[in-house]
Length: 114
Image (tube, rainbow, N blue to C red; front, side):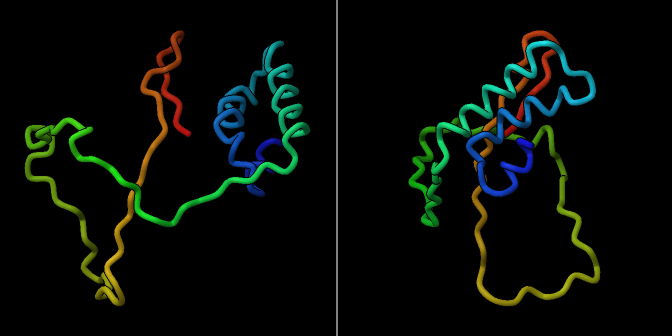
């Protein structure tokens, strides 16, 4: 199945598989054609590899608009459990980039993340 292919490393079809998974309960006529199209892609690109760079990306802070979220999150504090152990080791920085479309489905305005 497509989900199995994604699990073993074919993340190049992750978005398409997620979109098709929304129709598992009630598939329509065109959905099988789309699944066959994805399978054909896998057949043609058998030895496709993705390379992940462990370095930090170069991001210019001027590319982004500055927003003041104070009005929305006034007084917000992180919930820290009272029995949390003390941190050990080195400080870790996590950077996350999200590929998403907000209300991208024109019919029902649902969003899709990938």
